[in-house]
Image 1 (cartoon, each protein chain N blue to C red):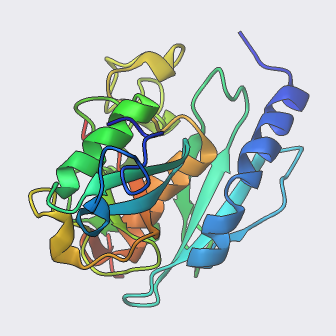
Image 2 (tube, rainbow over the protein chains, first blue to last red; image 1 turned 180 degrees about the horizontal axis):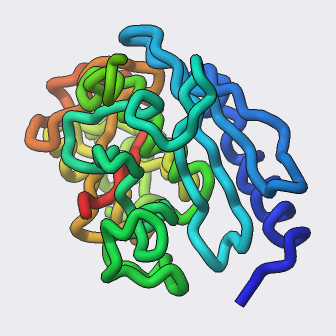
Length: 160
Length: 99
């Protein structure tokens, strides 16, 4: 099963339009879409400690498959390391593996981090844990809340 | 009461304007405008939004005043306790059910 890249790109472009108000309110810096890599990034700055988080959003085969979500260290450019991730007070959404531990995140599944080898990539929207996190806006809002609100934000996952 | 009813203007609810408040709730699924009795709780708003947009019954959600970085509204508190003004814009966020 695969999704024609043009379909994925068109879907993402449409869903990104819905993010414009949030982006303005929270100061998200959303990159242009890399049509070769089928990805974009979102830069979110925590107003609590001014730490910068760069979310990598790869959307090949989207929306049939969930996006591959990861964080890029803003200093070294390394991806998928603890220093790149925020930490949250409300459970394991930002899992110290490190991954975003949710069905909307491809790294949660078997074949990637393997943390949830019990989940199926196909039909990810039917996973009981997915809820409404099925669009770019909903995913970004859930991530953003854990970075910008002191209720959830607990600093950088690894300081050094 | 459904979301299309406006008791402040309804013929059967004279004098009810002091008791109700109209709020607009923004979600990733769309916007939702509805009147609530001020003595209802924040949980009543959350329940109404969940029902309107068919959010999962057992998800994790928060509701806050748009633009506020304070803690989210506490579900058990009455709406009136937050001193919201008529027409207040609230933001409902699905935080994702903990896996």
